[in-house]
Length: 349
Image (cartoon, rainbow, N blue to C red; front, top):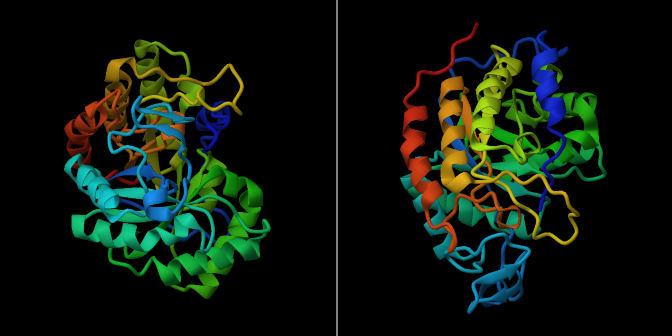
């Protein structure tokens, strides 16, 4: 379960920080004409007694009433286990059929439940022709050395797999805002430099903060979830917001960094007892919120469209089919993802 963050600063950064220049030691980093990707944030943290001998992330499952405590909706596949090959097969197949090119899989630490699920995820993704990368969630320590050790582990154990997402043959890693904040930008600049010295092939690092300063350090910028800026808005207000904000995000990434636009079908984490009201709820507006965001994302023409989320059931942002909502969001994805992927790559200014 994650937080939606403070997204007002993202909007202000996009408007107030037009100057763009690479950080010291990053002047030669140039990413232009990047192939289009449609990637969904994915959570492999669910478990049940049938597969993993205990419950992970599901609480008080009631199969008769189709209810799970602290889950906004009830998955069509039930309270599944992320280590179940049948579930991962279903997810990868549905994702490919809907036009997704890959998953950004939550990853926390070596040897934990998430880490143990990576081989199955990669092998299954390969069969379905989609790509996998990780969302690096938290830094051990937190220290630069801890980050570098984790990243080297990911490169050695997983990033050589043919299903790993790459740009120009360099493996991609997404860095979540929590991890970014633990080291701050100066620390991440050092971590990337130290990592590159030990892994000469390098990697493509995507930072979870949309600002010109972040674009100087990372290879690309993104945000995990914009609900802090769309909460409580009507459908037309969401359209107006997206029409202005999405192009600003692309501009903030700059001409030589990978620009991402993050879209959501909706957001509602009010089922979490630890999260006190008022909550930043973005209404789905009967599926129209997601359609509007897709339309404006395509108009903004970023390099990549990111979807929050495939299956963050605790926050009600999932596009995976549910008992309550069916497969409406996947049908919308299937309608718009091919349109986006058919666009020409973004050109350098």
